[in-house]
Amino acid sequence: MNLKRIEYLLQVAELGSFSRAAAVLGITQPSLGRQVQKLEEECAVRLLYRHGRGVALTPDGEKFIARVQPLLSQLRQVAADMRASREQVAGEVAVGMPPTTVSFLGQALFHMVRQQFPGIRLNVVEGYSGHIHEWLQDARLDLAVLHHARRSHHIRLEPLADIRLALICAPHAAPCEHQAHTEIDFEQLARVPLLLSSRQHGLRRTLEQTAQQQGFRLNVAYEVDSLRITKDIIAAGLAHTVLGPSAVREELQTERLVAFPLRNPEIHTRLMLASASQRPYTEATRQVAHCIKTIIERLMEHDCGEIGLQRASPFSLHELPDNP
Image 1 (cartoon, rainbow, N blue to C red):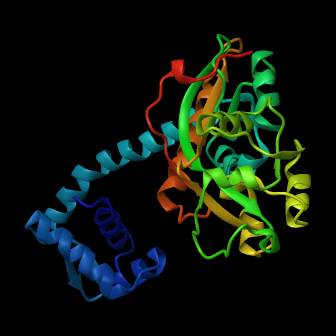
Image 2: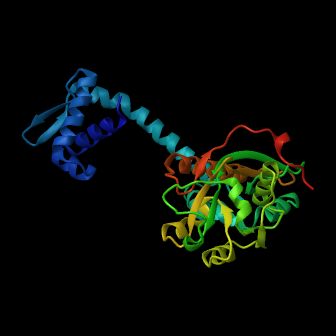
Image 3: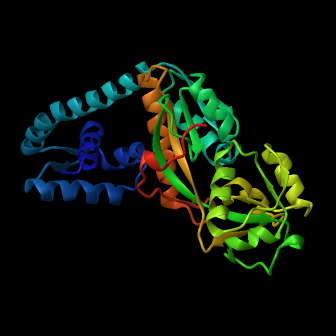
């Protein structure tokens, strides 16, 4: 039985008029009449009758209201209890994110946590994956979103999503003519000067391991651990870099930069949710972790290629490189 129709009936019965009830409910009078009629058809009895001053409940209508009102009160109490339980969740949760993730996850996370758990004080710390990994090991963070985290006794890991990587460059420095979704072979990275993060970071390790498997070395001309400086150098045409499209979404939209997804092989960076085993896993931490997973899931459902998120493939912790 449709609860909304029951609420409509209660409003009509209380006000004694379809027109007044429609105005209060913000719907048209014919639409309100159809919903009440459908409820009567479900019950197979007449619930209202019209008289000179408006409408009133029939005897069957009075019996119906007497039966459903306690049920509605219980449902309202369930909702109130759920809200109260959320408001009681309190505490500070420190979350580390790399710059490439803050751009599409940071604001959404603040909004969801503030809306659903006003008692949680959220602290987002930005840094590259290698630095965040050290902060987790030192128990300075509760949670983190990392690229290809390294295995450690002090860090719990859970896959969130995979991001397909692309060669990013200025339009005038592109290795070939650029069109929408133009792909290039991974081996072409050996022929262009690259700007990458330092070796302690997950994305750099992923690229170098793949290049080694393909039998060549990357031509790393610059090492920069700053996304803003990276964008400026690439836009100037001094080098190329490899990132997920999400990291430079605004620059791609304005055509300041262009992206060539890599193929042969396709390269993905794994986005992982990490938690510090040396810090207590509080209810506030658990709820923030759930918010992160919910946002990532929604982004994957609605992504049209701008972010490049894909569902994470199964993995084993034994496949991850050990902590040096």
